[in-house]
Amino acid sequence: MTVQTPNAQDAPSTDRIEKRVVLRAPRSRVWRAISDAQEFGTWFRVNLEGAFVAGAATRGKITSKGYEHVTVDLQIERIEPERYFSYRWHPYAIDPANDYSAEPTTLVEFILEESEGGTALTIIESGFDKIPLTRRAEAFRMNDQGWGGQIRNLERYVA
Amino acid sequence: MSRSRGGSALRVADAVPVFAALGDETRLSLLGRLSIDGPLSITRLSEGTGVTRQAITRHLYALGDAGLVRHARLGRERVWELDAKRLEKARLYLDQIASQWDDAANRLKAFVEDG
Image (tube, each protein chain N blue to C red):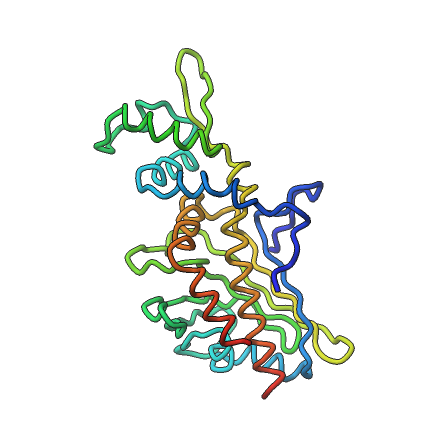
């Protein structure tokens, strides 16, 4: 299911993103923040309509400033309490005029592990190589037009 | 917060022609055609677009200058194909999404550590 990097000789993978962060909170707390749709929505900035149920879909409007018109659809794949949570979605599907439903999805995985002083969380998003190149190219263009400012907003909020 | 990418990050000077080449609807749609159906001849690429062959040719050369496409000979025909390596090397899309995940992870961290 997880797409592995075909060769790791020199070029980094274009297919996946992997982030690892240690959170100074118990695993049960981190699990709730990820697996409870309301809590997930608080930090992810999406107002989800329903709970996360494996095999079912849930959707919601983005609450980030400037992106309130965007609705995201999450297709929940697997839920293993306090250990693993995954869903599929359409990455960067921010143009409401475009129907993304026929396009390939990426897989987003959250993996929780015990770590000294807290919980180690690994976030993996994979499957980008199947996303049409035009979509990826459009994201460059959109980035040029507005993402820089958006990211600065987020940084201010987090700081 | 962004993780180092071992020197593979695209330099700004390298990215400029890529951005310029992508900042046009016709060129984006040409890239789209080539990524799905390529390699294709200029004749095939102009079909049904309402854009002249000359204009298509100009756009292809603009994409070629940015290193995004290249032409090759297929029998008697000249065909254009995607130079996906260049696009992949750029990794801008992935970097972009990676930076959103950085932000989201930071917000999650603040959320669980404060609450």
